[in-house]
Amino acid sequence: MLAVYAAEPHPDAPLDGLQVGERPEPAVPDGWARVRVRAASLNRHDLWTLRGVGIKPEQFPMILGCDGAGITDDGRNVVLYPIIGTPGFSGDETTDPGRTLLTERYQGTFAEYVTVPTRNLLPLPDSMSFEAAATLGTTYLTAYRMLATRSGLPAGSTILVQGASGGVSTALIQLGRALGMRVWATSRSEEGRDRATGLGAHQAFEQGARLPERVDGVFESVGRATWAHSMRAVRPGGVIVCCGATSGADPSADLQRLFFLQISVIGSTMGTLDELRRLIAFCDAAGVQPVVDRTFPLAQGREALELLEHGTPGKLVLTA
Ligand SMILES: NC(=O)c1ccc[n+]([C@@H]2O[C@H](COP(=O)([O-])OP(=O)(O)OC[C@H]3O[C@@H](n4cnc5c(N)ncnc54)[C@H](OP(=O)(O)O)[C@@H]3O)[C@@H](O)[C@H]2O)c1
Image (cartoon, rainbow, N blue to C red; front, side, top):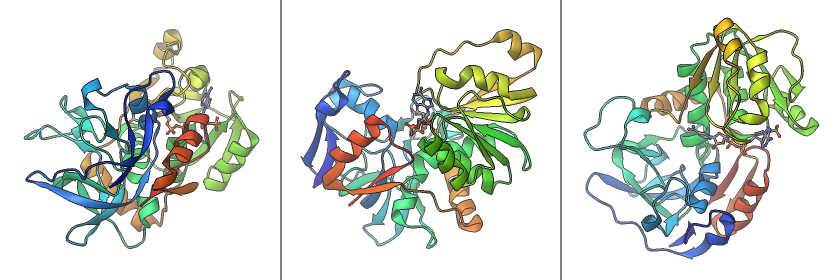
């Protein structure tokens, strides 16, 4: 079958290890199901895999793609949950020490077929296209958990989303607005700020700008470039929820501000199967359609990954 895969790790030039070509169809163990992939989204994690981060050398070659949507052999339209847990583990999957994300141990979704445990399949609602649904399992699930579970913020809260053009930020703006929050966003570019208000942000600001007032919660995935601003932007007793650090992971903690203003800093990663189920139901009920900025056929996987590496707004999706 046709697949987009990492042949071997290349820490400094990730795309040097990228191949688009034939790979064997994955086996279907007991309790697993085969899915004909219709769409799969690109994530920064795919670049980490190409660099050899979070994957053992013996796991190569590895088909890329952490999430997706498709059709099972018995004809059901499904959304994939990307975390494969330790057999027998119960509870919050994101805290399972033995958990693995698709592409870390098991072959990913940038292919004609993928196999996953049957529990990792959720029904795709009629209201959503395969392309839009392909973004749910990683980006939108991460944003949903940050907003709906980890932040503890009720509807009506004012939130700041840093780095509006990013995939996670796109989802945070859309979902935050749909969850009834007053959404502010920052972006380095005027294009990014226009995009943010087009997605539903009430106001958009330059990176680091002084805000009209402090916010109840800041949503961080940028890291070093925005952290100091996040610490200044949050109100006393407010919360910063962080899921990533694209610009670097060594921000100054600003501990004096942290304790004196009683700021809570909360980490968040991916989400549970139940949160994905609730996210799908929420999008269906609230009429939220995840935004896909560009789609590419599987055979053009290299062009899509080049765009991701060089930085492009929003979500890119491969279709098969
Ligand atoms: N923990 C998890 O489960 C999880 C899940 C998904 C993603 N992540 C992580 O979250 C981060 C964001 O992911 P993403 O897919 O949204 O990435 P992305 O699409 O590449 O977004 C990064 C955004 O950060 C903003 N930015 C601001 N200052 C920057 C700087 N100095 N350098 C680079 N970017 C800067 C940019 O927006 P503007 O141009 O608008 O400023 C850019 O579009 C990544 O680090 C990713 O690994 C974590």
